[in-house]
Image 1 (cartoon, rainbow, N blue to C red):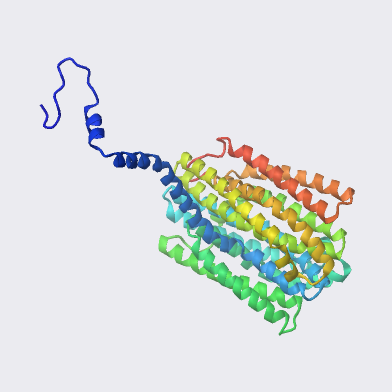
Image 2: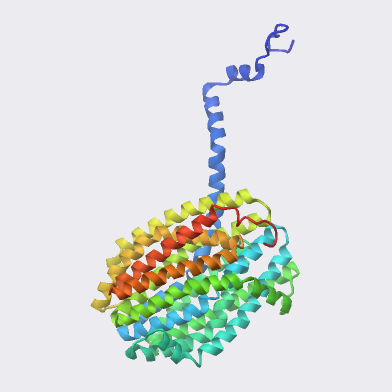
Length: 479
C-alpha cells in the first residue's frame, strides 16, 4: 500500500489514480491556471516570433528609408524654387534612382547569402560573402558613375524632362552621379549587417545621414545660393560619409572573424553571378517607374511635378513596408540555412499578417493628412490639386503593398531568385498593358496610377501562389 493512496482491489480496472487524486487535491483556481498555461504556449510562441520580427524590422526601417528621405527633403527644398526646377529634379532623380536601385541586389542578395551561412554556423564564410559583395558594389558603382556624368544630357532627355526643366535635370544628375559608388557601397554594407541580424547599426548611420542631408541641402540651396546644384552636392557628400561608416564596420568584422579584406576575384565573380537573377528581377520592376515618369511627362509640367512628389512618397512608404521584408530575408534565410522549414513557414505567415496591418495604418495616415503635407512640397495650385487626387490611390494601395513586399522578402531570403525574375517580368507586362490602355483613353495622371494599382495586385497574386508551394523551402548553407 502506498502512503496516502487506497489500494486497488485485485483484478479491478486500473483508474488514473495519480490524475484523479491530483485533480481532487488541486484547487479550482490552480486547475484553471494550468489550462490557461497550456493554451498560452502557442500565444507565447507567437509573441516571441513578433518580438524577433520587430527587433529586426524597426531598426531596418531607418536604413531602408534613407534614400527616399533624401529625395523627399530635396523635393520640399527644390519645390520652393518653382515648378520647373522641381520637374527637372524629378526627371534626374528618377534616372539616378533607376541606376542605383537596379543594384538593390547588392543588399538583398548579400542579406540572403549571409543569413544562410550564419544559420548553418559558418560565420567566417558569412562575413567573407559580405565583403565580396562590397567589392562588387565599388566596381559597379565606379562604372555607372563614369557613364552617367558624360551622358547626363541624353539621360535627362530620355526621362521626358520638358525644355524648361532639362537644364535643371542635367545639373542635378551630373553632380549626384559622383556619389553612385558610395550609394552602392551603402547597399552592400547594410546587406552584411542584416544577414548577421544586426539592423541597429544601419539605423544609426541612416538617421545621422538623413539629418546631415537635410541641413546640408538647405544651406547649399538657399544661403549659399547654389539652387538645384546645391541639393545634388549635399546628397552626394552625405552618401560618401555613410559609405565610409559602413566600410569601417566591414573592416572590423573581417578582422574579428578572420575574413580577408583584399579583393578576392573568385569570390567577387561568384557574388556577382549569384545575384544575376535578382538583377533581372529589379530591372523588370524598375521599368514601370520609368514608363510612369515618361507618361507623366507627356501630361505636362504640373503633372510631372505632382507625379514626382507622389512617387517619392510612394517609394518612402514602400520601403517602410519593406522593413518587414528585410526581417523576412534575415529570418527565412537563417531558418532555411539551419534546416528548419517549419520556422521559415511560420515566420512567413506572421510577417504577411503584419504587412496587412502596417499597410492599413499607412494608407489611413496618407489619406487623412493630405491637407497638412501637400502644401509643404509646392506652392503651385495646379500641382497641389493633381497631387491630392493621386494620393488617395496611393493610400488605397498600401495594404496590398504591405503583403507584396513581405512575400518578396520571404522568397529573396529563401534564394528563390529565378522565380522572382520571371514573376517580375510577367507582372511588369501587366502594368505596361494597363498603362498603354490608360494613355490611349486619355486617363492622365489618375489613369497612370490606376495602372500602378493593377501592377501591385498582379504581384500579390503571383507571389502569393508561389508562397503556398514547397518549391522555395530549400535548406542548407547554399541554395
